[in-house]
Length: 250
Image (tube, rainbow, N blue to C red):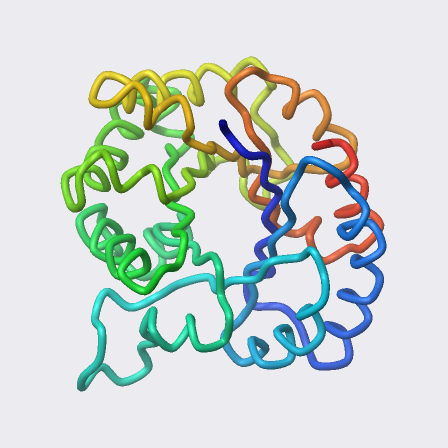
């Protein structure tokens, strides 16, 4: 059975004081919402603080990136085993910002997904098209290439222990949001493509929408049949807004 998940992506935000206030304000809602899991993907330096503040809560936590390597001479990299020591349950791989700003291709994203799973961490694999690709009618081709690379690295069975996030690049941080129908169409495409390889994996695959999810559009998005929750950016830094999104998902 597919599970519902709302994951916050703090990106490069936070401080010790801000984090403590935000997590304290989120816990009452996250601890009482039924039928949906809440997770927060935070910057590496705050993993220890987050583990301490959330250890008795219903909120899971994770990181925003991971190395493809297990260990070695890779200055600045963080391995999946290191993340696991801090209690990370999730890690984002292939976010559009990593693809665009750090030239990460789909093959590398696939290796990062495999590394995370090797340490028992659930990867949230991101796929999505730019505005130019959508306007050229290439949305499905772009998403298929990104998704196929994940499957090629570890096999379709690996998606049974993964989450996919569809994030139209043109709707991230722009205030624009794909309509519920536009988002649903791509989510359905993803599930059908996975289903062509393994129907049971597709039936259980959690697929999130990420792209300017707000309290005022969350319910309409989450009621679509193939949308199982959200990967939330800026709104995850606002306790009231993120709490409202959690309630909408339930």
